[in-house]
Length: 206
Ligand SMILES: [Cu+2]
Image (cartoon, rainbow, N blue to C red; front, top):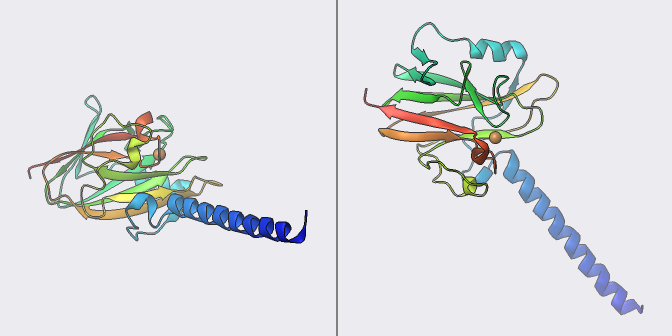
């Protein structure tokens, strides 16, 4: 090979490596937070909980919550509501959400309530997030990238990393449910909602 040909190949090689690195950075950024799946960050930040903190969050409060196991519904009362959601709960599929021991329960809230969703990732090998959306099932593998987006301002938490050494990533977001109707909370990681990682989110009249 003469020198000119070698130099051209070298330049092409450098360009390909740069493109590859760029694609990796893009994919990683997409997966871990800010800008995730086109919604931007809700700026709630990610921290971790230990097992004791997770247990505390899972304790059913004495007021403000009505759990119906038979119907698999949880109604949250009051103008300020905390909804603790476990991704991949111990008693459910890895592609499910757990709230107060129920798996993918229907969440019922009252119109104009200020909702804080706190998501904890219990999974040791997958990212999980949550979006409250008006996009109804069935969800398809790629369809989770094309659903209708958050139903309310800030009604999503970008995917959280997996649990490591009993440290459970957690994040929260706060929004107001200004519209009556039936919505869904779903995991926006590709393929998860289609495997059953979603539940109903109903806003009823106060
Ligand atoms: Cu998920």
